[in-house]
Image (cartoon, rainbow, N blue to C red; front, side):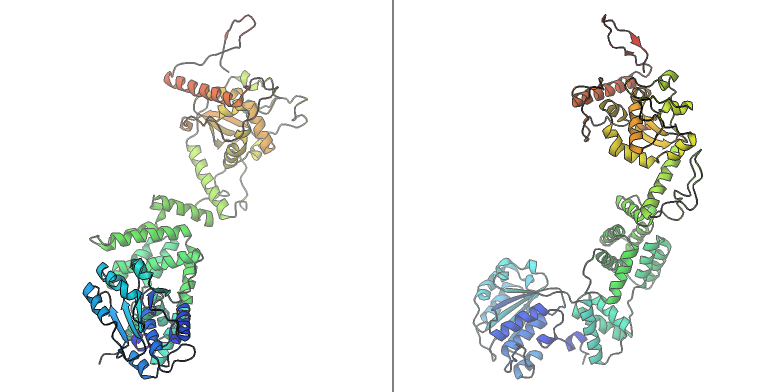
Length: 623
């Protein structure tokens, strides 16, 4: 005689032996105790969670001759013994997956009205969602109004496939996956009752294989006992996870190769790895992992701490795609190895998700040790050497420092060309503004004297060393320019400087690049206003040098910035009465001049002086 499997030998015989289904047990016990048992029930839930066993226990309770006060069957009377031995005439089990035709259901209905030895006849239809449409329609009337002694119990793993007309005629009770610690206690109880020699690691492995199913857990335990230990453990998964953490594809490929040589299928490795990473992702999201053992929960938390959520999400996506592609691949090993190569060498993957993951890793942990930080970067020409103990501490600051170093290196390799300006125009201050420390003064090695009414009176102009020490970094000036300074400039200066950008820091000034000489000359006319805005924002003089950079050419700017436009004042006679109209005119003029100069490369811009009292106009050189 064949040995009876563990899940059959230790099948629950009463409500108290059911594991992890307290709500279902409480509802059925109360119904039996109070005599309010329904005529039809729908049991739904994952496989191996006790649906059919609960239906058999309900049949025992309805026909028990010595029912206890809490609704539990005695398990000793003849009716209970007949149900346990599968010889009861009061319990009829039908597999709806193989008996799903109209004739099968009609035959069942023809015998429903027949009496039985017990007080109630229980019909159990397993996998009821497999019934054909005709069979479902044939069952509807009898299911709605069965004889008084008949109780229908419909079991299914896919309740969404059961038609609403059947669901509405039943009481729906849902079975859930069983928690890992509950399954582990049940497995230890079975091992003790059966007198088996199984260690705790084997029990944990069986619980993991069961994945919340009591039947699958006991089946895995049977296999472990037959093999004399855990024979299907996938050590390759641990090696692959370590390779993902360390970004080293060598150990991952070696582990896969050794596992494939032992006879495992690539799909088995991929599914095991996918399950491990999924648990880690759920742990990172704070999900409930009670269906796992304590050791598995700790492993999931450890993996989630080493791999960021973006990395876990991308790994799940890449492995899931690889598992789908394996179905049609001539060699599934290639799909698995390519997926692992993409995951363990993110620096070679140009996928957008890989780039996002690398950015998140930089923000969390900083750049790799081989990447020079801000404290180790080559100092700018003329700047003092930074202290070796000085530098950013957080990962976010180190990432920004590394990116700034790379950008500075690229700027040094491609230094923009600049055009000299007329010395007279450099030193001449604007008539309606107090003299400021301008770019011309810095480049000429001198600063204009401050007038007595200037807010800078009494302050000595900083020397070259002080200016260099007080220069903001490129990232600081770019952020300040876009967030604050540009929006608070007068309308005329804002429109003219809108097409440029800060590209680098010289030894003594900031370099502001413009697309062409025409725009540079127009910006020179109002640059004193920008110098004032820079000084007001940073609280110190910030020298700026205008240069030409062809790569800075951008599409025409938005003619209506989001920031509030400043209203015209009496002191600024050149501002338009309506700021929005001035922006339109100024931007249109700027765009028209740039287009004309691009169409006629050898042309020269000539501006005209305002008309005199006599109405005559004379040309003047561009300024």
